[in-house]
Image 1: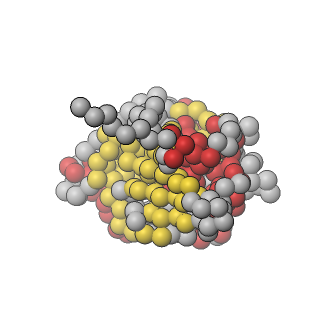
Image 2: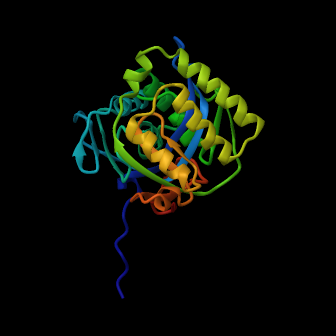
Length: 296
């Protein structure tokens, strides 16, 4: 019997998995220093996420980024590659079942996954916190997210107590796991929402966080998310009708921030008659996968 041919480890691409992140509520916290900017709030990380693979190309080639086989413009990914000094020799291939721009933190996942995989592929020798901070800064500077990256790095049910990258931000969590369902109706621009009057978001988000910390459970998180979306005036008619339908059947549901998306615990959407996607809360944060000595 012949042995399988040996593959030089140095020729292998590197892949990272980053969980999707559904924000239940948040308070934007801008700052001149992107390491200190971010948001307070809480959400769920999901076993549905993004696989990001970094390949080496010829030196001097223009970096390319694709999502599900299609070329995409993803400024946070480009910033991460520049920050690691590998933009002239990296190709980023991302795959995900999650829709872009609908409240699942896909851009943050691609930035963080790129940081982890490129660091591994090119031997950049950065620490975990350095890589999370690099991806967080890239998201903040691009205006595509404020708290997804630090939440996705942690996993579980992250609660963002103070804004910012590692070294500045502070997180806690709700120690629980459940089945999660979701249905996405359309996208919404995070940058446009954050460019408007954010005072209602801050007031509603701070109140929701205070109540969650008083009773840190998944039911509290979803209930406060629902109250936040209504108080901040973020609910579109289609989202409101869906959330109300789940509530009428005894389920727990709310809107994913920021997207035209509804998420529910357990079988809430299915019980209300919706054709929903199903996953679970992700116990682990972003991590490398595959390779000769790694498994998912």
